[in-house]
Each structure stands twice: as C-alpha cells, then as structure tokens.
Length: 379
Image (cartoon, rainbow, N blue to C red; front, side, top):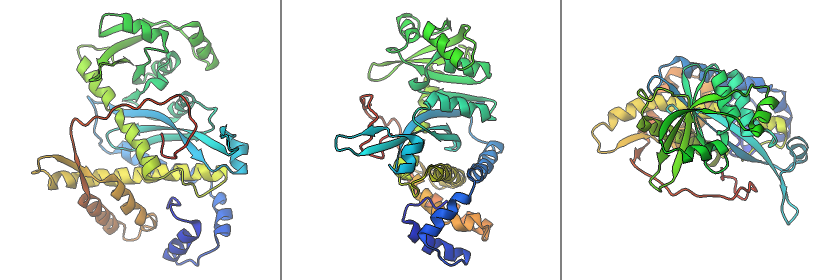
C-alpha cells in the first residue's frame, strides 16, 4: 500500500518497525506478498467507492458524471511478464518491451476511480469497458467517452443497459460520422443504422444490431475543428447545445486522473516482476487515488472558506495531498488515533493550495498511431 516508490529493503526497514515487527529480507517479503489474494485489494477499494457513492457528491443536472478512458502501461520486461502479457515490441537494439492495457471509470467531479482494469494488450479499451459496465452498480449517471469508444456497438450496449452517454464520434474513420458532418443541422435526433462491419461486431459481442436513436451535437472549437458528439440526451429543450458542450468538456477530468496515476504517482515504477504483483500494485494505486480524493474533498471545504476573499478560486494541491496521505498510510490502516489523524491530514491538505486559472487551454499534440513507448509518462 506504500506503492514501492523506494526500494523494497528501504520500505521494509522503515515500515515494519511501525508495526513493532522486525525487518525481514527483501527476498522474504517478495515471496510472502503473493500470498495476499488480489480480492483483498479490490474489496478494500470497494469500501471507499461505496462510501463515496453513499455520500452526497456534486452532480450535473442531477446526473453523476463518469469519464472513461484507456491508456497503456509499461511493464518490467521480465520472463514472467513476457510469458503472460507478451512482447509488445522489439527495438533495433534487440531490447524487448512489455505493455498492458488499462481503463478507468472516473467521477470527474470528485476524482474517485469507480472502476479500473489492467489487462493484456489484446484486450481493447472497449472490451475492458464492457467488463466494467457489467459490475458497475451506478444508476443515474452520464458516461463521457472520447472517440476511441465512438462505435455503434458501444452506444448500443449503453442503450440496452439503460445508461446515458455522451461519446465523441470520428468524422474521418466513421461512415456515420461522415454523414453527420454532411448534415447541415448542428443539433438533431436521428437513427444510426449499423454497417455490415458493425453488425458483425455486434454478433461477436452477442448483441442485437437494430438501429438506435441518437442525438447528434456538433461543437465548434476555437481552432475551427468540429467535434461530433453522440448522446442519449434526447430532450433538446432540456439539454441545449451549450449544455452538451459543457458536458463533454468535463470529460477532461479523466485525463487528469491518468496524469495523477502515471506521472505523479509513478505507477510504472513497479516493485514486482511477476504478473500477480502488477495486479496487486495497480489496485493499490487505485485505492490510494481514492483515499486522496476522499480526504481532498473534505479538505476542499476548508480551502473554499480560507480563500473566499481572494480574487482567484483555489483547490488543494493534489501532489502534496498524495504525499501527506502516503506518509500516514500505516497509521490510517491501523486505526491509530484515527479521528485525530484524519483531522491532521485534512488540515495539512487544506494548507497546501493551488490557484484555479480560468480559460486555460493548450494546443493539441497529434501523435502517430505508434504505441512504441520511449517515455514511461506518455499516456
């Protein structure tokens, strides 16, 4: 749970004495850790998710907003990794690399990870999303997804499960998207009839492929680019085009979530060279993200009060909040003066703030469709 940001031996020598235990060798710990079932980490994280879902949270027009996105994770190229995850690429120098596919479903208002999956690269983002939706007990929510999910079978799945969504559709690679671009209207209802390829995909997923009712909304960006959004929000009078633009803009929260998970928390600095350890550490990172989110949301109330008279709005510094919580993790998990410890943590988190600068924007970087990983922090 301390996330292996230092060597195993260092963590053992500093953490075990806090439990009144004698340090053991790194090799002994590395053998013992695999006796912990993966379900322990999942159940521990589920406690935080259930707490979040029971507590009042910010909503958008009565809906919980769930951003979904996928990424890749670089793995240690050990023999066990190559056997389980496979070799993804081989450089000219002969160095082999291993990658895993990950997906997160993220409450964009509270920063809580509602579900996350890590799997082999052969499992696509859409497959991981399908698995997440099977187990996700969320009712009134809108799922906001980028164009990597803009396919007929994904929209069909949401509608069959009576879930609302707002998904970007490609105007280049999708025949339906091209037709939408040719339509002179910027906001309208239509029916999406699947192509032969889309029917085949539906059959492969055990889905029917009858036409689906879709709302198409066109959003023009400052760059002049037009985004096509497909949604289930059919009430044009209730949800205006401006509302749809605001809604999709809130998807950026999931991008910030991956920024926290990978560059800030250094997910790819794994302390294991076995697949079982990778799954353990991935779940432990999600648990830590949710601990920081819940603590940070409590501290944010104090930040708002303290900064109410300032010109800009402020929020707690997530990076420092992560450090504060991580340093107190042993005490939190052992219930050492828990109320006092929580008060101290909330006070610490509220004391470190950053300004929220409105209307910030960055030029979009376009990458070639080549997932060869040179840098671990590349999403």
